[in-house]
Length: 427
Image (cartoon, rainbow, N blue to C red; front, side):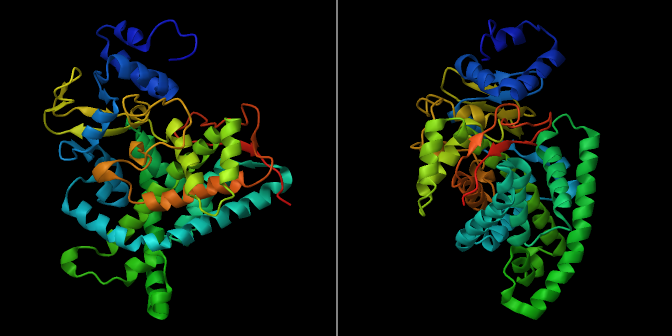
């Protein structure tokens, strides 16, 4: 709850009486303005909270229960946003043939053996940007690191460089905003995503012909993900044709841009906000074995996650937390908000959740989703995010500027737009 607040959020909500529209609007606004305080009150008083528009699930056990039952709590609401933009996509499907088949194909071409090279490449790209900014003694971490590094990796490793960086940024932001943030179904936001999809498909169709010619000429020398897909000969009954290749390439960009940028800048800010943690993390960054350092990044992101929740649609009646005092029937047709950002502050599972601790077990993390819909790119993201943060913490004199420049600014949008960080020239 906000400092100095004399009345609880739930009291404000209850005072609205039968005004369903106002109740839904208040609950929605609290997610944006004080999700931590709002979720804390819900966990303590109404852990499964029904509103006229949706139902919140806030306890760790209940969030994992919902996300573990994909046949009951489905991702169907994503399909009307995703399919017109990139084509029928596995992320908007639950346990279906397209999800089973295409997830397996993409996991095969995103080889775990590539990760050391991906991490090294991310660090090199971050260093290039830091070197360029060194003479100014500052770097705008969203545009020069958060967005820049992952989009360069999309080009270098996935084989999807785009016509220019600005187009890639626009395509990434337009699609992620519509698919994951446009719950009110703003038609202008959806149209921007559709236009991004049309442009991506046109670009990738031309690039596919170039890839095919390159593969014919160079064979196995072409090692990016796009080239691997082109080199693979799928029997017709597998139903993985050129359209499916393009859909999955577009999906890689959709999943790589804004959320990775957000993870980089938000974890970095949480580390820099704590002088003792910053000193420890900077020391750990010097170790060639990055295992210890990475824990600082993921704990920072736990304290300020990229998404407060994920949503699912219940397709049958189901009782969540059956046998407990909070057991609640979720009727079919309910939009359910699984509040992952709340779950990682649940004291039943996470001791002293307000503390920054690097000894927490991995299982409490929702950084890359949970269960059946765990992010396809989790291992690539696990290389890019901490290595980008590590490279800046290796620089001398890293510190936050005073607010507002030194605070992450969303500019009233869904993703970080600016975050200024000071650092010195390592020479």
